[in-house]
Length: 64
Image (cartoon, rainbow, N blue to C red; front, side, top):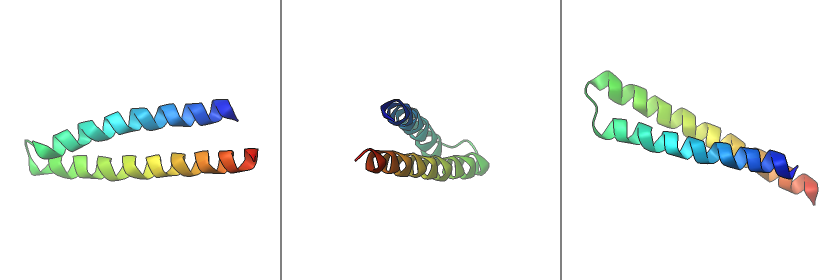
């Protein structure tokens, strides 16, 4: 269980760095489509982070 939790936490860290990059692309888009793609990336990354956090919560609850 602990290994699964650590793996999910590491993935969340990587997703957070991807989120920062997508937000930077939104701040300085070259074209409107770049902004839209970055916005979509941010939404997808945020949802994936939430899913991982929920999985961690479930794993922690099952350990108790």
